[in-house]
Structures are given as structure tokens and as C-alpha cells.
Length: 531
Image (cartoon, rainbow, N blue to C red; front, side):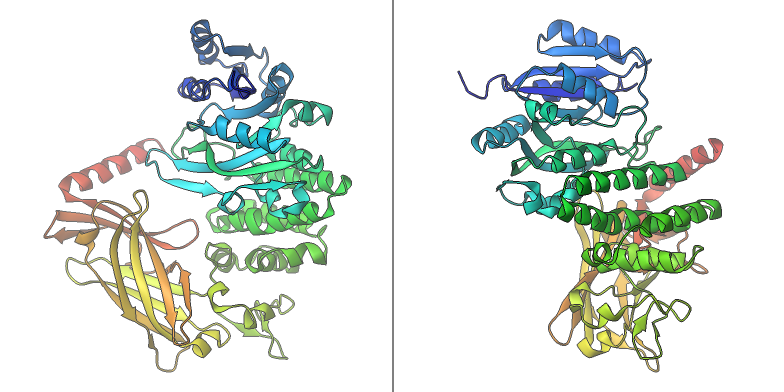
């Protein structure tokens, strides 16, 4: 018999998710003989999920169903139930709205067994639905196979806070008492992962895709990671970060603890800061106060480990008791980061955030490689029936741009879902007279692109042979960022919507033909009726 036969318990958790839970369970059962059992923990659903699971279990002896009598309010308690119920040497977790890709369990189990690892981890991909576009999660960690005697050998591990792309030795979790926070505790996987790392397991990393995380942005009930509009979400995330740091620090894992704080600056602070101007004034004040209070517990070494954009955003928050410069912070928090004018200097000539906040120093900008600088490019697109023009303006940055000598820009519109390049060309950058900026005018044939959402991507080219990939800030002004219908030789009629993404970058939606116009107007009317 294969030594990997019947070695894994897969714990599937769900609540009121009858639409998807069967797909998750079937993806776990389809992993083959390595799976001893699939333990489906239903958190007291009222939509028929439990009955559906019981029907599946009647035909599948490897499926066990646990139905909680009272809803726990979170994801941690049902996963803990699964850990207690598991009978196999290894356990892994699966959410009811996600799936395991073919071969996932075999890949993780093989690595764990061959390397005598207590934890094996692999690549997770975020799959946008319904488009199917996939984005890898923390791909740097899983670029190649690796075996780590203990997690502190690779502090980047604290960036992968997911619990679902990993296989755990069951007796390891039980021996160390590693469990999820019970009850309603958003971001419970942050804490669980910190507890795992604090126990210093031997780990095996594999480059294979082992988990598919489904992202449904149009769902009636958004997932915790997408539902960020309320301040309670940020409060919960901050508390989970704080607890994770304490767990690692008290376990003597100081390097991992510091790396966790750097991650908070680089990932969490930047993600929420770039959405801040979409929130109301009350939310911004509460977010600012919560963030500022937490950042005051950081020390100099914590800030030093974080990449510059998150570090500077944090310094601005600490320097001001009230929210300020929110649009500029959004640009700096974007990916890639953009530092928009004005570019102030202190009395000694040192670059600073602004004349009002000279204590936030930006002297690192004088030393960073050009390809890492937060260059600022503005974009203006006015759709016309003929000769649509995209105007780009590159701003100076403490003389770094002028020293490098901007010469040209590669312009590319890429289809967001299909990844297809619809337009690509290179145009010269010309210095504006009496201005610290460079201009490029790009003719755009909108008919070439076709339907869908298109992202604008740029590569700036400099005289010294260096280049910098970036996006462009979408200018908002009279006649800009508004829906326009233009005649098209190819499509008859083209509905054009330039808009700013959450990060402030210019993007473009196109709906060709009268049918496209009708579809868009129909969706708009439905939204108005449901407001």
C-alpha cells in the first residue's frame, strides 16, 4: 500500500453557503486516497447546508458532517472542532467557498513526509469570479522548494498569514495547544499562523498551487478581507496584528515579531490608506486615531525594516493628530507608490513630506535606485470620435528625474481579466518649458481595445539606460472621468468610461455597440432602483 494512503483529514467549514459548500467538499474528496476523511463542520446554517452535506455523506463514506447547535460567529471555532475530530496524521483547512486544485494534498503530503516537516506550505492563488483572473499570494515564498529547520530562517513567512495553503501534522498542533481564537474574531488566521510560527516547526515549502481562494466582489455578503468599509474591520485587523506580535515576541522569536510589524506597515497600513479618501470624515478620524495609537507602540527598529512607502505613511500619521494629506497618502500607498507634488525641503535642503510636516524626512529618496523611486505620472484621457489623446505628465522628484534624463515612455493597455495587451507603443517624453515636468502625448484608437476593463501600465525610460515601471494617477477635472458615447468605425458606437481605481490609477471600461450601451444603462437603472 502507498505510504501516503489515508494520511490527511481535510476540515471544510461553512455557514449558510449551500451554493458553494458541495464544490469545496468534492474538491477535497477528489484529492484521492491520501485523504482519509473530509470533516465538514457546519456552523448552524439555516439555508439547508447541513442537510445537503448529510445527503453527500450518505453516498461518500469518507465524508463526516459535524453540525454545531449554536453559531460560533466566526471561522475559528468550527476549525477547532475539526482539529479535535481529525483522526489522520495530518490536517488541513478549506473554506466552503474555495476549492483545492488537483494534486494539492499529494504535493503537500509528499513534502511533509520526505522532509520530516511538521508544516508543509504551498502557493495560494486568488481567483476573481466570474472573470477567472488569478493572482498568486506571496509568490516569492514559493518560487522554489525549500526546507527550513525553523521559521526564523525566513522571516518573510510572517507575510503569509493564510492557514489554508498549509498541511499540519496533527500531533504538532495538539502537542503545542495551537488553536484558532474562538467566537467572532475576524482575522483569526493571523493569530493561528503566529502560534504555529512561535512553536518553531520544521517547514517544507513547495512551488505548487495548493489552494484556490475565490474572490467574489459582487457577493451579497462580502468576505472579511473584502468588507473593509466599517471601522470595526480595521479595529479587528489591528487587534489581530497586535496579538500576533505579542505571541511571537513572548515565544522568543524577536526577528519574526519585528517582521510582523514591518508587514503591518507594508501591507495593512498601505491597503487601508489607499482607500481612505473613499470613506467618510467620521471613519477617517477613527481610523487615524486607532492607527496612530498602535504605531506609537512601535520602536525605531520596527520602522527600519519596513519598505519606504508604508514607513512614510506611518510617519505622517504619527506627526499629525488629525487626518491630513489623504489624497497624497493614497498615492504613496498605491502599488506602485507615487509621491505627488509639492516636493518640500527643510532649511538644510533635506527632502521632507511638506512644509507643515518637516519632521517627516524623505532623505532616502536621494539614495534609492531609480527603479524603486515613487515617481508621479498624471494621466488625462478625453475620449473622442477621432484622435483620442492620452496626455501623460511626469513630475520631477528632488532632481532625481532630471539627473536620469527622461527620454521616452512605453504605454500599454492590458485587459484586466484576460491579460491581453490591446495597445502598446513607445512615445517620447518632452521637457515642459519653465516647469519641473515632462510631457508625452499618446494617440489612442479606442476601437482597437474592444469590450472590458483595461489597465494602463507604463515603463519610463531614461537617458542613463535605466527604466521604471509604474501606473498613472487619473486626473479628475471638468470633462474628465465621465462616461462618453463615441462613434466607432469598428463597433458603430463605443461607450467609454475612464475612471480611477482604488489606488488612484487610470483605467478604462469599454462597452462596444448599441447592445453594450443598453447593458450598461440597464445595470445603472437597477442600481438606482435598489438604492
